[in-house]
Each structure stands twice: as structure tokens, then as C-alpha cells.
Image 1 (spheres, rainbow, N blue to C red):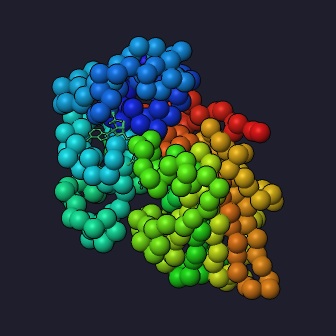
Image 2 (tube, protein in one colour):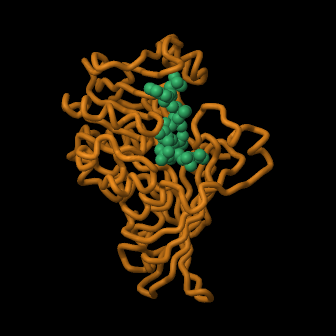
Image 3 (cartoon, rainbow, N blue to C red):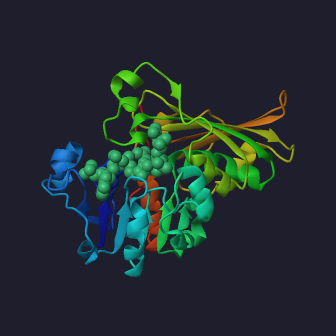
Length: 335
Ligand SMILES: NC(=O)C1=CN([C@@H]2O[C@H](COP(=O)(O)OP(=O)(O)OC[C@H]3O[C@@H](n4cnc5c(N)ncnc54)[C@H](OP(=O)(O)O)[C@@H]3O)[C@@H](O)[C@H]2O)C=CC1
Ligand SMILES: CC(=O)N[C@@H](CCC(=O)OP(=O)(O)O)C(=O)O
């Protein structure tokens, strides 16, 4: 049994981690932490998890909580991991962080996209960027992983093989992606309330969404990214466009790049978010358009699955030397 602590266990990602860990052969969620919901039970906060976790109570994190823990998952609001990381790393406990705090590789880029100075710039180099399909070897030997952002995961998996094989021009990439509302977390906000979102489709974060920086870092490319909010609960569909170089067929390149991957499937069909809902799956396709000379690539993920908790567990499996797919074998829920 591998004992895990979950910081942010009372949030949406924390709930999804608990759901996935309940079906994991080796991981156990032994310490659960929240903030405003500290003292409440899992059954109260995540009623769908009551049959497994019953009256387990959320605590409030302090350093002593790291005793008897084999791995820490953090799914906290932005910024919180910057103060915590040194304590966790000093104890040598493997740490999978989903916040954006340690995803970028330099403090200046962080400040440019997050609007404030990084509080622990010396630790940026300690973290490996957490998308196993593009960074498996580094994750396997690492004690600290910064799991990627949800939009960034969708776009990077669709584009990375095309950039690497020089099938698209990396200086001219456009990503339009739409997310379900759970991507914004469970806290009630006007921007994600029912009356705002229902029956509507809107872009946000114009020219300024922070996942642009992750895409540019991982792809070594220039990206124009526009996120959208779509009236559904789970899922991200990323539609990506880039100038073709004529160096090869994009769909064949995706199929070849992911032929041995357990979670990423490149096919002829245009993907739908529902195909991957509740799973760690990624569905991709791509086309070359000879009329415009552009490549079109599409990617569907579950923002809470491969975009968050699924990817965290996939990274943890690698860090711990377990089967990479342990606890992640479920297919999407469809229809
Ligand atoms: N939702 C998604 O699809 C994705 C989210 N992420 C990132 O993952 C992180 C968590 O997201 P999500 O679960 O959606 O967010 P939620 O708002 O649903 O959950 C946030 C969690 O953090 C806890 N928390 C809030 N403030 C504090 C604090 N001051 N100290 C300690 N704990 C605190 C909350 O506890 P309590 O509720 O008890 O106050 C809750 O458990 C965020 O950084 C988010 O950007 C990344 C990829 C996808
Ligand atoms: C729909 C929605 O609001 N989505 C979130 C993305 C959440 C996420 O993946 O990322 P971070 O961990 O980088 O915040 C947003 O755009 O802020």
C-alpha cells in the first residue's frame, strides 16, 4: 500500500483524485486536506464518493501531516505550492503538483504570464513538466512533477509530434480550445454560474491566457491561444491550426508518434469530448488542407482526467515505478 496525502482534496480535482485512487491497485488516500471544508466529511463534500470514503474527514494541512506519507498530490489554487514545495522536497517525499507554480522553467516567463514574481524561483529547476507522453524518462526518475495545465495538455499532445517532425511551421500556431465549466473549479463565481454559461458560448482570456506559456515552452513554438467556456461540465476540445511545411502527412505522424501509447489514440474521426469523459484518454485527429496549405489538428480530453487527476496519477505511477496505467484503465463514459 502506498500512502498518499492530497492537498486540495475537497476541490473538483481532489474529488477526481479520490475517485481514481479508489480503483487504484496500490495507492491509498490516507490524508485528505481542505481549507474552508476542513472538519467536514467526504460524504458531505463529495457525495458520490461516500460508498468508498464514508465519513473520512478533511483536515487542515500542517508539516506534521507529512509523517507516514509516501507521496503528496497537491491540487491547490495558484501560488500555494510555492511556499509548500521546499518542505515537501526537503523530506524527499515524491510530490505531484497540479498548480501552475512549477510548470514553467524560468522565473521571468512566470512573472510575464502570472503578473507577479515567483516566490521560490530556485526550485523551478527541481520540477519536471508533467506530460508523460512527451517527458516520460524525466518523470520516471523524478521526485517532483508539475502536472501540465488542462488546455496545454490537449494542445501539446495534438501538436508536439507535428512540430518535432517539422510538419508544421512552429512560428505560426493557432489554438482555439473550449472547456467545460468544471475546469474553473467548484467555487461559485458569476462567470461560471448556470445563468451565465447555459445556452451561451464565449471566449475569455484573450491574448493573455497563461497556458500559452506552457504550450510555447513544450512546443518551442509561437502560439496564439484562445480559450472558450462551453456549457457542459467536463471536457476540452482543442482545435489547432498551423502552416504546413509539406514535410509529411500529419495524421500519419500522430498515429506513428502515439502507436505505443496507452492513453492517446489518433484516428481518422473528428474527436468528441464525450469519448474521453471520466477517463485518462486523449483522442486526436489531423488533416492537411491543400487549399490553404494549413494543417488542422484536433484533440479531446477530459479536463479533470488527462487534464488533471488522471495525468497526476499517471505521473505518480511513473515516479513510483508502478505500471503507468495502474488505476487508469477505464474508458470514457458514452453516451
Ligand atoms: N478543474 C480542472 O479541470 C483543473 C484544475 N487545475 C488546477 O488544479 C488546482 C485545483 O483545481 P480545482 O480542484 O478545480 O479547484 P477547486 O476550487 O475546486 O478546489 C481548490 C481546493 O483547494 C483548497 N484550498 C483553497 N484555498 C486554500 C488555502 N488557502 N489553503 C489550502 N487549501 C486551499 C480548497 O479547499 P476548500 O474547498 O476546503 O476551501 C479545495 O480543496 C488549481 O490550481 C487549478 O487551476 C488544473 C487542471 C485542470
Ligand atoms: C474553464 C476554466 O476556467 N479553465 C481554467 C483552466 C484550469 C487549468 O487547467 O489550469 P491551471 O491549473 O493552469 O489554472 C482557466 O482557464 O483558468
